[in-house]
Length: 490
Image (cartoon, rainbow, N blue to C red; front, side, top):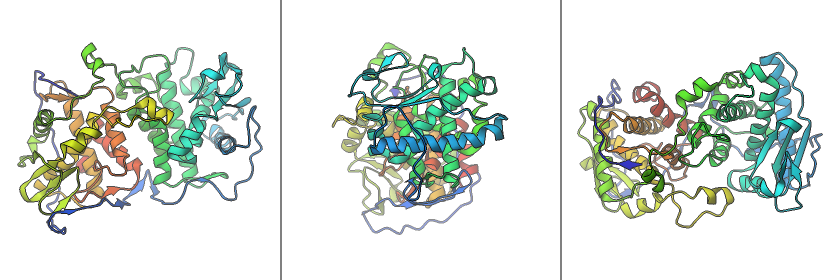
């Protein structure tokens, strides 16, 4: 995020108007530090929220699939089951939605980039660590079983392997559909990647509906794993969506997955350049200074002055006395505490532990994340901190207008309002002296997916169980503004 004055001003964000007044009673003891609890709320795109271990079914048959180089390693077994399963999916979907038979992928290959070198699609496997890909000239899907798949399984579980292979099959589907998906030789990479992510989401919905012979997927932790895996494989901040090979920011990729999960494969094939250009968030740094700093602002008391000012501007239309951000140990002397950031109802203040927040606000080590060798000094980035502070600030705003501040809907409304604030700050005419840099929205999502995150938590620090709903709420606020927060999360 960047700080600095900008000319102009727009009307303050319209926030939580028309909500019924609800009396709130503090239930915590003086100085109590609340441990966040997961809350099951609502549904996931029309499906019930379910809780069980996702992965291969206990009674899943051995798939009748062969791949060059495949071993008996668990990663290859999962990959082959994933391919058999996603093939079943497209055998069903292609005739139903596109009026044609799905021609199965011709070649499959498993390789170890640290093993014997082989040439695949014109490139040595030694140069393809942390990779899975579809090669159109050979109609080949290949995957790195030595580095990529073990990393994904360790970080996110078995469904991450299925997600990555489903994405590559999405590219094979594009090749077969051609004009039916708007794909030709001039189609930009980002459009193809958004479609493939969306196809992945539609396939995951099929599994969650218990239509798969091989896998089962819970709509809480299971879907969280899928979103986390594709979020991990995002472009670096400052990348341009029009570059060859662009996959999109984490914000963009999770959007596409959720779109497919909600609306299905036919909708995915409708994604085109016009749509992508309207909503894609992946943009380059605006100048050399911003690029040199990677868009990171220091986590200091001085920077928090800009955070306070921007939040006050964004929510001024509510007429509520704004909470004041106060440095300390991040706890309240009375009532509920959710350190390192707490909203203290008694004095309408947001108490912050700046030392802890400074550690969280250190730049992320994306290369370390991908290799499994994260730097011990790595954090999540500045906007992870600012959005966490904002999440407690909007507790005061919601309380001030009489909105419910406890429960799952309050947690989702919180994430939505943080997204609305990000939209306000990103408006060049807002007058905010704190404004977004490339990668900031990804930092918010990274924070949102943390077990300790307050970003989609109610006033007690209790967060919503399913990451799908948490990310969707933040995105709704950012893309549609604050009115959707009050209309959707009541």
